[in-house]
Image 1 (cartoon, chains in turn red, cyan):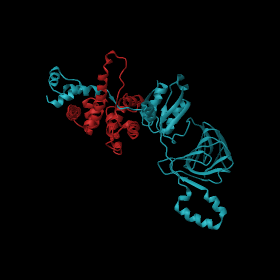
Image 2: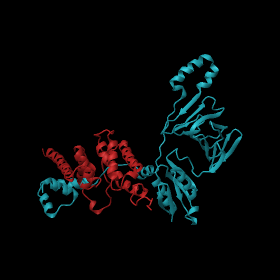
Image 3: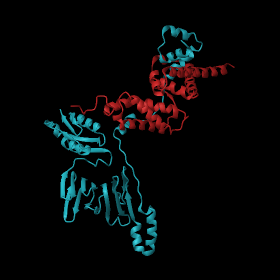
Image 4: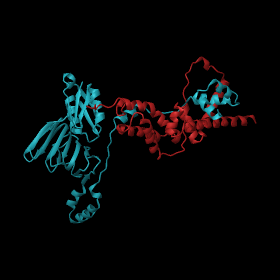
Amino acid sequence: MDTCTLEANSVCRQEVFSEIFQKHFKALRNFLSYQFGNTEEVADTAQEAFATLWQNCSKVTFDTATGYVYKVAYNKSLKLKSHQKVVLAYEQQAVGKSENIESPEFLLEEKQFKEKLLTAIASLNEPQRVAFLMHRIDKMKYAEIASVLGISVKAVEKRISQALTTLKDEFKKEQAVKLI
Amino acid sequence: MDKETLLARLLEGDLSEAEKKKLEEDEDHDLYQKIAAYSQQLVVPDATEEQRILSDILSSSKAEARIIPFYKKSWFKVAASVLLVLTTGIAYLIHGDTRVISKAGSNINLHLPDQSEVTLSPNSGLAFNRSTWPFNRKLELSGEAYFSVEKGSLFTVHTSTGDVKVLGTKFNVDNRNGELKVECFEGRVEVSRGSASAIITAGQMATINGNGLNLESVYKAEPSWTRSSLIFRSVQLAGVIKEIEKNYQIKIDHTVGDDTVNKDFTGVMPSDNLNVAINIIEKAFSVKCTKISDQQYRLEH
């Protein structure tokens, strides 16, 4: 007699689907934002990708669900406008920490550095920017990034280190101008 | 180890002591560290409520609407111009006529002139007279439709197998396969053919066919085909199972005894995904399902 209950990790179980959603929705939406900007269309595309996963839950396994939802999102993203700017921000720092009592000069310098960093990131080419932000913002490991982008881990390392080098050069450019 | 890998490791935060020393020799080391530290604090600002999106997805439904006014069909334009020439009286009546026809595979939702709502199932059609509607709420139906009728004067649905009359209510009329099946979800509905008639209320279904007029009980709160869902409001296990059996064409043996049978269920389950529907029943009634064959299932504790 075979059991007709859903397997413990079937994607059609609400708790399993919810787990996949909580874990990957934000990262998927961010991933689309890095390429197409933080628009409503991007948020809708991410939502549609997960809705498609839910509708086809019986055709996907727990392990392949993430890859599936990224693939669906990619197909839907073909109709989005590319080269849109993504807007980033810094997370609010906790106030009142004793080690945060710094001089006004330091705070000003820090503010300028953070602003400059945003501009520098916007100047990265798309492959570098996407890989870099997936690592810094979504905290994805190199292996995960490689899997989503469909490239090797070595290729991911290359893109990210090139991003870091380009950013460093952007800062040095400004410093060189200041010295003159 | 080349510089590329060193930098990649720096961001990952897993440099060995020797590798750290090597990087410290680089003149830009401090700058790399600073970039790594601050980029760590970046976020994508977002106002979306993830929980709302998740619950929207889990309870999704679809609806479409398309109306083909009778007078848009080209052959009617020819006929209309001829009739206008003949008499203005007849032209007045035909000018108001509206015919709606649905294709295979999709529903059509529409509002009648008094804001009553109709959902036409695929391959169905209805016709009514827009201008005389305020005086006489009468329409013709072939196929199947779900009606939500505004309270008011008598509302009549005429089919080739019989008539349905209501004052203000929610009901489903199914006139396919030579039968007339009317399910009432709210209010009172009179179903008649010739001299035979019956008045049904919420939770009842009347069937008129070659064998006459029959009544039975229904447990859904709405027809399952208007959205792809079975909707239940405070229904006991036996009722839920009966609807699932009907919808999926299976038999479920459920002799669980004890007070599980009396437990009330209010919720939504898909009408096109048996696995998910069973999962929901298992959770709601604390039972386990076993498959005996493709058409036979059993529920027990």
